[in-house]
Length: 251
Ligand code: NAP
Image 1 (cartoon, rainbow, N blue to C red):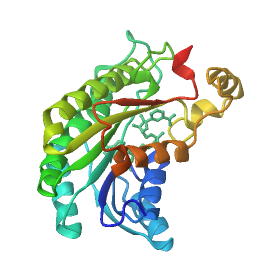
Image 2: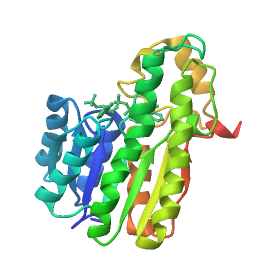
Image 3: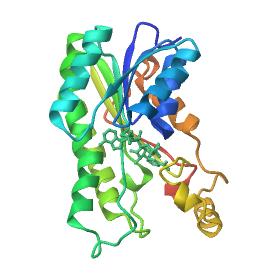
């Protein structure tokens, strides 16, 4: 129960990696704020946590909108009284398109969801953590924040590279005040977001071959790593990017 007495925000917790992380934090005693736009899916995550004996609330927010992020953090403080950890995981990718074909609208949406939102979340979470005596933040990057791909997601690649720099800057600014900030960069993890690609047997075979360990990641692989990064066991770990990729980026 590493997280008893701790309050954790997980954004993008209505599905995939975020839902798994929310469940795993709660399993170790955290009071969890489940943040996402889709209320039905968010409440489903809360129900999964509560039915396993955990504590969670749903906070509806579009993390690209400043006043919604600010209201979400206020809501967490009002309901739980403090904030110790945040996993800023919400993200999106553009429809497959190269740098020339990519639309301005998709570029702005992806940068806003993956990069601006991580900044907005930290902007409001850090003061709340300072009031709680310190805290730990993990921002979601991607292995494509470390290496690029020609698969047709240039805005996604740019946004995920950006998240790593943004996180390091915040870590340097607030490290001496008791705030740790890190990133996690997974390679492929099957979720609803990438199902259309991984359902294609040829693409799946090609993608699997890029992972020297011989399998794709799981949402639990990522949740376990994030739980360690946010825990007191990782108290000297800050301004880092944890590449969790089955060997993908070593080739
Ligand atoms: P997913 O199941 O589609 O989850 C994405 C989550 O982000 C959803 O809960 C979605 O909730 C939320 N979200 C998107 N836009 C939002 C917004 N504007 N405001 C609030 N919430 C928003 O996909 P996933 O694979 O678990 O992805 C989670 C994160 O991991 C993403 O940042 C992704 O880039 C990253 N990642 C994934 C992989 C992978 O292979 N799966 C690898 C590396 C990195 P609502 O739609 O309900 O708002």
